[in-house]
Image (tube, rainbow, N blue to C red):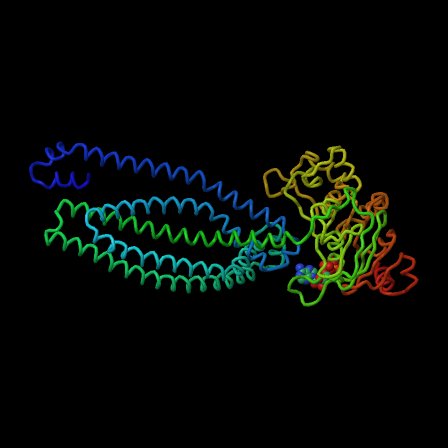
Length: 548
Ligand SMILES: Nc1ncnc2c1ncn2[C@@H]1O[C@H](COP(=O)(O)OP(=O)(O)OP(=O)(O)O)[C@@H](O)[C@H]1O
């Protein structure tokens, strides 16, 4: 149709008459242009609708895989790097849709133009291909080089964003100011940024050289196409109107080529990021499927036994736990004491199945936790960790953690009362409905000790048969601490309870005290027995009493 319209224009018998005679061709051209516009707009609209959904689903996969992985995975820097790359990849999932749409439409345009060129004269096609291939090669190689640099930079990128958030976030704002740390942190930020930029610049240079070679070869191909076209016209083997259509097609395919190569290279880079996303899902799965499916009794274990338990953190040179043997019965309260770094928190995590021992075993009623269904195990555990989280949620959700009991708020108030958090809730403007997200409008904040009472209330509310509290009263005033330990005996009835404390007088209420030293059990006994032994425990207690 284009050739017929052009021929009508170029014949010299009057343009209007020529066009009138070729009205059908003109209508075909107009319809093709409108059709193209409509299809293109439709494709863009569809891509714009799909892209955010793709990002959401990809991100949810990362979140689900990360939360299902073993806790110890977070101790492995490779897992963290893979996680960062996957989060990056998930964000690019939307680009994948948009780039794929752009690439498809550009490729369709190029294919159409190439078909036209071939129909007009077959010799033009190989020349056109010669102008495409080197350009595409250069772009793909360049994208690969830049992505490899991005990969090498993953650790530093993570470090930089950590520096950034530590420097500017509310939780660290007081230390940054009181410690006049801002200059130091900004200097560190600059150092890491410098490393990142140098690596990126090196990669960009390499990519530009490769792309330059590809583009130069492609330019030779394009020049050859134009030369062939000129030769065909000059030797009378192609009419001028046909040559004009061919010239239009070559121009169209040239423009489409540029878009195709750009979109293709971007798509390729995005696909490499999605490779990272997929790789993380595999890595996380490997950290998920390390346990069995044996079912734990629904009402929790009667006996927890640790035999020859050793635990070494990934990458650590020395074990944090070394040959621990221990038996904890339901209804018993055990206090774990020892110096900083002795292994108390690690042992608490191993006994509750949060970590699996590197060697040895932890059994709940004879079932090795390595063979047990992890969800079934953790459903029986209530844990107050040393570093509890100040969830940006309402007070109610900060205690129920999204798992309300059938009794509703009655259970929440009972748990709060046992943890001494009832007075905290009573002072909140909207009681349990008060948002504890200070950074958001209308949020309310609590003091360190008030937060700790809420954290203890969480564990009490969970009403699980295995209760583990890691320094639950470290931030509490004397009265609040006294109240919790007074209540503990009652709350521990029918449960297996472990608490970690540095205030050794609190260990008096435990049925058994276990003293840890450098990952080993150094003493075991009741409070009175350990005092009689006059060993480590007695010595630490004396030091504490003398100080007080
Ligand atoms: N993520 C980790 N990677 C490597 N080593 C770790 C990690 N966490 C703890 N450790 C090491 O494991 C040992 C035991 O740590 P753990 O936190 O269990 O001690 P703790 O007795 O609870 O100490 P504290 O009284 O200070 O809370 C320490 O030597 C510590 O340095």
